[in-house]
Each structure stands twice: as C-alpha cells, then as structure tokens.
Image (cartoon, rainbow, N blue to C red; front, side, top):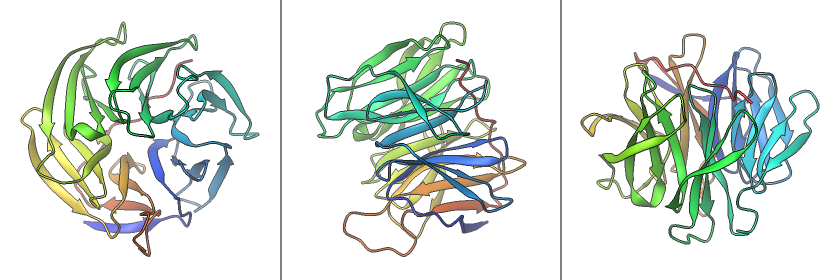
Length: 284
C-alpha cells in the first residue's frame, strides 16, 4: 500500500470527492471553488463559485450540480457559470449545504449544517429529476457522508456530532428512506466522522475530521476492519477513482492552528486490494 499526494492544488477545506469520466471532482468549501483534477495529464481546472460550496455531482445530461450557501445550483463546465435552482433553507442564515451524493436512481441527496452548531437545526434534502426539492428528514446538526450498498437496497448516513453511522432501507422507486438503525458506533475515537464511500465488497470507508485517518467498517457487524493514517489531521472525505476504481482519493483541510506541510492537499492511496463502485449522476 502506498499513500501519495495527487495534484498541486491546496484547499482551504477540501471535501466531496467524486470520480467521473476519468477525472476527480471535489470542492474547496472555504475557498469557494470546485476543482476538476485529471490524474493522467495533471491538469487542475478551477471553477470559482463565489460562495461556500459543500458538494458537487455530475449531471447525466452534462455539466454539474452543486449545493452551498444559497442552495442547489447548476454549474456549466464550459463557461463556469452557475444558475440557482432552489434554496430550501433561505431563511436560515447560519445554515449552508454540506455533503451530498446521487442515489443509484439519479436523485441528488444533500444535507445542511448549522454553522453555529445549533443542535437539530439542519436537514437532509432530495433534489429530484424535475428540479423540485423535498425534506427527507430533519433534526440533524451536521449532515455529512452518504453511501449506498452494492445492491442499492441500503443507504448509510452520518450526522457528524452523533459519532455514529446510520443505516436505512432505500427504495429506488420512490427515493424513500426507512427503518433507521445505528450500524457503526465510532465513539472509541475522539474525532468526527465526516465523508464516506462504499466499496464493491459492501464495506464503508469513513474519513475522520480532526483524526488524520480513514477507517474501513463492516456495516453489517459494526466491526472496524482497517485504518489508514495520513500526515495531516483534517481528513475530510474519500472516494474511489482510477481506471479500475481501485485507488482511494482523500481530501483534506487546513487546521485552524496547526501548521502542516500537506494540509489541504489531495491524497491517493494505491495497493489496497479493494475496488469501489461507479459514481451516480443526477438524472435531472
């Protein structure tokens, strides 16, 4: 196994990596940017968004969809222009969108965070193919990682302050989440579970903010299977990439007081002997 740097860009707070059509997309939340990294050429294309952006996903008809300070937006890769769709929390000035992903059936699920840590004031939302939005559930504080099982029948979710991972039954016909249960308790670590990705074996990989690590769990048993340590504390999210989806890309952020040489950089882990699942695009 080898952990190395990927690209040259240094995020203030990197998040939300996703592999699509031979490139890695991710966001720099505090830098107000979306980054497209082509590992083959080394090219890094920067999209200036003009606000904090928590998540980016590809759109099946071309372009990208993002969610940030002012809700959901369409983003053109050709021009860099973005067009507002809807902001379901426009009245909550201390909230913004955080992590999100598309389901196997093409719905974009993204959740909000209370930036003042107001408990239970954030929610998870669904943007459907008609560009309409609905609240899936509320009562969370920092909506974070999402991942679907290989058979698409289960979805896993993180509300960071709870320091546990929830599992739900998922209906690909309706987009409904049901039968919530705690599948992993992460409280043995005094760190914050953040972004998450599924592998082809049905195991989840969780990046721990403030912990400098990514941990692999079995969601069926809650067992910790593997831990990867990184040379900076703010490991924020992870995703599978590369031609064979066998490379784990990990985003990081810059700690508010610690000086670390590689903080904010993108990392890639090779030689894990595990493969991921293809990313899903937004169907709208």
